[in-house]
Length: 477
Image 1: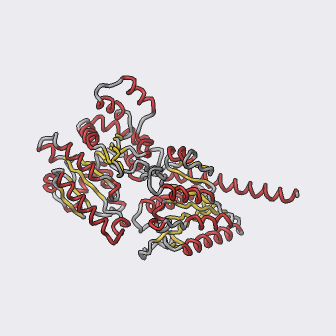
Image 2: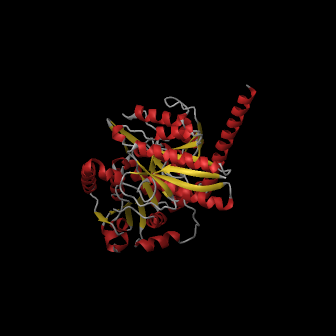
């Protein structure tokens, strides 16, 4: 029997990795109902010092993000628990989530994870490093990020990645990692697809009778929402007044709490003012609310964009995803190799428009044969070529354009064109939804739990074989 220790941020902290880990924990616990090889699942929660109140059924120890001693104490506590478990025939393994913003004070280049993993290695506790970020060689902090990645991987038995592209890159320069790398999909919520679900969700949110475009998740400068708003403004220029009234663009999710607190809120205030100014300069009428359900039909018809400025609950997230006809994900991070939002687009079977991050390219685009077909025909009209790709994709992927000295920005013209293409071609949109849904059926959390279980088994059996070889070697001397 294998006890699992998940080292991560955790609910109620608002953080994508906290959500990811909560689903891992819950899916492993459900999985053990049918597979007794999984034992207890514990969480060592990384805390910013915000006095988070964790569920004691989940979290057995809280780690101060900025305190190295706290990390080391957690490592020693896990090691002792694993040792105690071995005395009664159990095994233990650690799933350590690695993202640079949660392992210490990033501005101080702090790395509290590596010493913790060394403690675990010294106590023969196997570790899987769950990687959420691939260092970008063009980033000014690349060398620091690469050093942390190499150091943490040195004390890990395997690295788990969500993207195959990330796994391929990690084994090549400039990363050149020698650790075993395993790809496991991001999980998605299990869905029972029923006719009328979308219309029911729209009615619950007060969106009935409307075509719903949405962008979900935290907002911050690297999310690119101002560019999807600009594209939406361009898209609306092609519509009649009656058509315009029937389309609601809901940008949902508040600002990331860590971003809000940075530099005592200065960056947040400056960006929010700029974001609001940008939307007005695009000629968009905007309504900001924290309570979407209290808006009237008149509110939706009079405003081009609804800012649902709220950290969404799980139920609210599900409702808006279900209600959406098209989902736009305009991230500016070309090196993004994991996204819960993009994964859920497939899980919910929704048509989508995403910028060309590594992860979006991998899960949304068709195989290389489609590109060869497009290239060989040498379409004079670039839109004709793009639409041939879109017609075979799980979702539309649009280019990010480089800006000197800044993060890339979304191609506004292509997003506007893609939005028109999907919303005014219902059959095309429906076909894309079915392709997305087929891919999403391979990603339910219960199946992902099984994939992790197989990885746990492989690592523990490998550890046991290594111990047997070592003992045999000692006896032969």
